Structures are given as C-alpha cells and as structure tokens.
Length: 348
Image 1 (cartoon, helix red, strand yellow):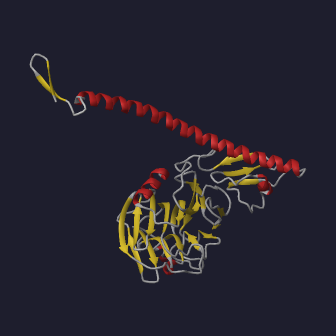
Image 2: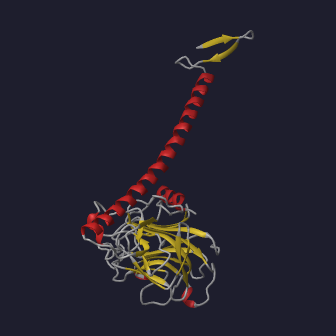
Image 3: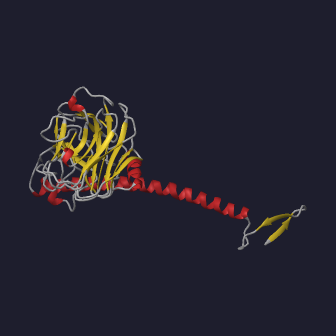
C-alpha cells in the first residue's frame, strides 16, 4: 500500500498492517523509554531487597541469641571475635537451636554480652564485588574474608581450612590471604574423599602474583594454587617458570594438562578457572578460554586432602608466592557463559 503526501507526491510505504516506518520507530522509542524507567526502578528494588534481607537475617540471629540467654538464664555468652558463617555444630554458637534455619549469606561475630555484628558479602559492613552472588553447583567457597585467625571458613559447605602462616591482606572482595612461597598454605578438612570427583567439576579462584615469571628457589616452580593429590589427582598450578597458569587432571585413562596463553604480571588480579567436562579439560583466564585438550574417564581418586598454596600435605615443593581470594569448587562443568557471569560478578 502506498500513500501520497505533499506537493511533490512523495511516497511513503506502509506495511501490511497500515503503519509507516516512521510510526513504528516512534513506538519503539516510546517502548524503550518506558523500559529504561522500569529497569531503573527494578534495580533500585533489587538493591533494597538485598538490604532488607541482610537486616532481617541480622535481626534473626540477634533474636536467637537473646532468646537463648533469657531461656538459659545467661548473662554472658562465649564471644566470637572473628566473623564466620554460623554452622550447626559451632561450639561457640549454642543458640543455633533457636534459629529456624541457619544463615547462609553472611558471617557473624558477637560480644560476650550478646551484641551481634554482621559482615561478609552484601551484609552490614561488607563490601566488594561478590554481593549475594555464588556460582551454580558450588560445594565449597573460601571467601578468605576472616582477616584474623588460622581458619579459612567454607561459606558453602563444611570444608573449613587450617592455615599455616600466611598474611591477611585486601582482596578482590574484602579480605584475602597472601603466601610467601616458602612454608605457607591451607589444608582443607574432610576433603580426602569428597573432592574425588568421579565426573565433571570446576575450580575457580582469583590470584595475584608477587613474582610472576620468577622463583627464588626450586620449591617455587610449578607453583600450585589449589590441588587434590597433586600429579595423581587434579591441580590448578603454574608452568615451570611461573609465567602461565596450568590446569592438570589425571583420570583412569590418562593425565593431561592445559596451559594459558596470558603472560602473567606481578600485582595484577586474574580469575583463573579449570574445567573438566568428561571429554575435555579447559583453562580460562578471566572470561577467555585459552586452551583445551581431550580427556575422558573417571578422575583419579586419592587419599590426600585438598590444599591451597602448595602441592600436597607432606611435600615442600610447588609453593605459591602471591595472594589468593574467592576460591570456588563446583561439582559441575561450568559453561563459558557461566564463567563469564562469575567473572562479571566477582571482578574487583
């Protein structure tokens, strides 16, 4: 259908429903403006909802402590100076029986008089990039936000880590832990069997190198970030000269490793991810897949616990000299899209 307008008989084409292109563009512009307003309001509502959830959870914990102290005729309670996730078997949290459910998103400390402080991702006093986000199928998550003490608390499961030395520093989100490449590290409790993955899994973490492309002793070559069984199981580590990242997995069929192409620099944060999906192993740096290799079979089972910052419990080699933060273990092969979402939600 054509119509004629103006003296010059200019033709404007309508579509089969009778709208001109100009009319359609005007409608699209109006819809876009409305969508922008709705999105802005929705974003504000989400932020408000997260704040309200944090406040509600804080009130719930405070109410549980108050109820415990009244019911048990207590004037004081064992103080917790270092904020941590509340667990059902916490020896210094006798009030857990007064909680309808255990808090999962925030960490708590309290005074002997029972005054509660909330911290952690998204909570009062918390900061950083993780917010309320956690990747799918996460079974262990060491935020390393404790700032003091010798325990790395698991915010997703029951795999707390025992820290040997190490220095608490600032990380991509709140705190992090720095290793000296000599004798520092973390050993993960109850991980001897639970981290023997029969099939798909993903390990991801943030690291910052103190001496990229170098080492002060042989013990720092192939520096491990996190490992379960070393060469006998799986490991996120570096190459020989600590110039690139590596991800290695041994199955009942073979052992393969993949190496990143990014040349590491000191004092730069990298998100480093290894994925095994049953047919390939893949390595990502930030939001980029940098290498892959074919690998099938069941991941080799080992009797050793998972460790961070070194190769294995009783070994003194492959020590990492740098900072680690936000370490996740997932019993799923994360997709490229999920890894990029994780990167966007955790980057500093």
